[in-house]
Length: 143
Image (cartoon, rainbow, N blue to C red; front, side):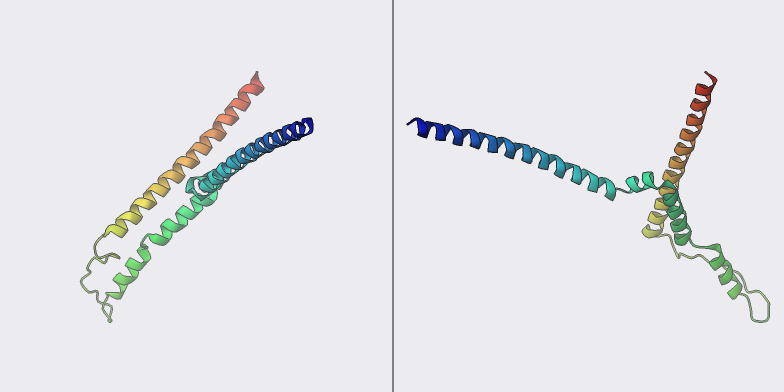
């Protein structure tokens, strides 16, 4: 009987050891999955990329703004086309790129305004940080 008891004790100990290992693995996997999920969410977020590459973000925002905004050259060219063939000018009518501002125009305008504000705020914060750091460094040198 003592052999059966010893085998049973060994099996119970082995089961407990395996259960503990399984719990440890589950805990590690749980933390890993949570960390991966947070990393993916951060990398999808536009603010992550703006913080990581502020100069590129500012350049992209400016390029998109110029690309979306109606250019004055188009308006000027349309006015010139309205001129008569023998050089006399026709009655100039105001020429607008958009017939009436719709929801799309208002949305694009607001997005440009918000992007410009965010980029400007971010750049000003970075400049202030650099200035503060330089002032702190000079103060440390003087002491």
